[in-house]
Image (cartoon, rainbow, N blue to C red; front, side, top):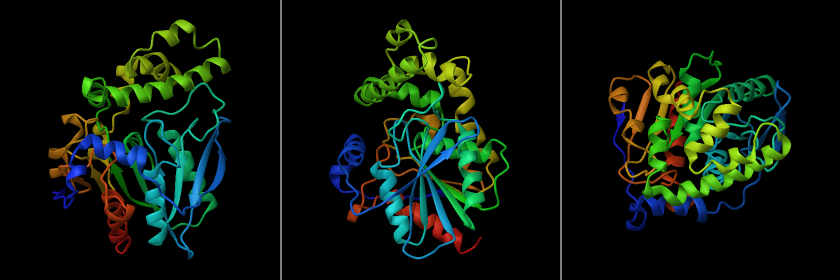
Length: 323
């Protein structure tokens, strides 16, 4: 305990993990939803954009949302989460990582799976400038790894933070990278690489001495990108060092707040190391749910509310009555 029995039973079409992933990523639409943008200047002079949405009545409860690789605060899994939470009495703050809000960030560095220093600044800003008594964290994919690493790596966790939910999390970045490099995931990998290379071209134009044409041309895979850019820009030795230092798996046993972790068994982005079953079995705080279906950040649900959106709300709401 706590290993959770999942109640997710999608219709036949969404029992295919790839279809669940693609539908929710490319075709799902969230309508009648409004966000207000705030720009946060970071201590190193760079910036992050925060997309806020609010419940109709004043509330003391906030959920901070963190997107996945090459996502942003307008992805349907973010706006869908925020919309439901707003309807249920929570404000929501969607964090756009450096360079992910439609405008290049000002530094050579950008974001990565373990950049908890930026999350720390966001939370400090919110706590200083707002009056929320309960703050919950919800991360997707890369954002889920970021949340779990933050909670377990030894940071001083503000008392306002009560719990977290993490969806489709690559708990072992190396394991997940190997999955993305497989033929089964070639289309996803090509899409990610296309977006990442476009941003690297921007970095090359801004910092020509730091990225050569030879560097750019040498990138054939996502691991190559992490060797050429991610590791160099963020002070890791290479891609493997980055994966080793930033995987949340090693930090899970040190988390001391309730966490809901949902990884679908048919998520093609995740290998066996991304399902910490034994750790959860012996944990007080890690509530692991592994539905048979769901894909990667899929989990189709009725009325345009995904299963994980409803589950995360229920998890936070139940805890809110006891904290």
